[in-house]
Image 1 (tube, rainbow, N blue to C red):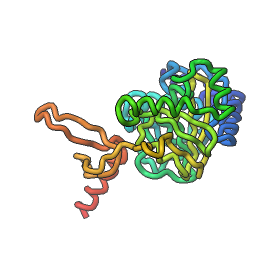
Image 2 (image 1 turned 180 degrees about the horizontal axis):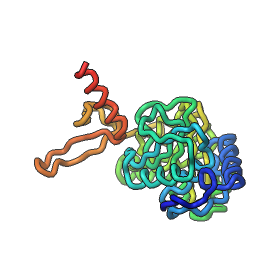
Image 3 (image 1 turned 90 degrees about the horizontal axis):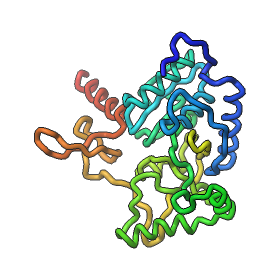
Length: 288
C-alpha cells in the first residue's frame, strides 16, 4: 500500500474523479436513502475492504480537515490503520485523531461513535452490500422496480419469517430501515444498537459501496425508522445491566469477552476511543 516517494494527486484522485464522486454524493443527499450509481475507481486495496468509504473520504477531504478512521469500534485495527496511512500519504495539511469530537470526517466500518455527532461532522460508512432487498430479489433490475413502486412487502415478509421461526427478529446487524417514509435502506453492517442513532441525527451520514458501485445518504434531521411490526416492534441490543471493566461505562455498546485465566465473562466498551477518554478523564480527576 505504500505510496511514499511517488508522485500522486492530492488525496489520491484527480479532480475529475473527485467531482464525479461528489456529484453522486450530492444526488444521494438530495434523495435520502436512494442508491446512486457511481463509477467506482480502482484503489490500492481490494474491493470489499472499504473502497467505497475510502473513495468518499478522498473526494471530500480538504486542507484543514481532521480525520478519524475506525473499524469494529477501534481506531487501531489493521484496516483502520492502513486506510489512515493511505490517506495521510496522499493528503497534506490534515490531522488524524482518535477523538471523535475533534474529527470533521469520520470513516467507519460497523460502528457509529458512542458520543452524539454534531452538524459540522460528516460520517462515512463502508458498505459491503448496499441493496436491502438483495436476499429477496437477486436481480438488480427488479430491485430497482421494487424501490420505484415502494413495494417492500418482501422485506417485511423476511422479518416475519424470522419471527415465525424464532419468536423474534434475528438480524444481528444491518437491520433494514425506512428513510423519510420513502426508501428502505441498508444501514451498512452497523449493529441494531446504532440504527436509532441515524434518526434525526445532527450530522450527515454517507454510505459508500465500492464493489457494488453505489453511494447513498442520510442527511441531517432525517426520519429513519427500523422495520418492525406493531405487535413485534424493532428492538436494539441492550446493555442495561452491564458495566465496562475498564472505564465503568453503562448503557453503551459493549463487547462480551472471556478471561482466559479465570474463564469469567466480562464486558468492555466497543468504542475504544470513548473508553480511553473516560479512563483518562478519571485519572485527571484523581490527580486533581
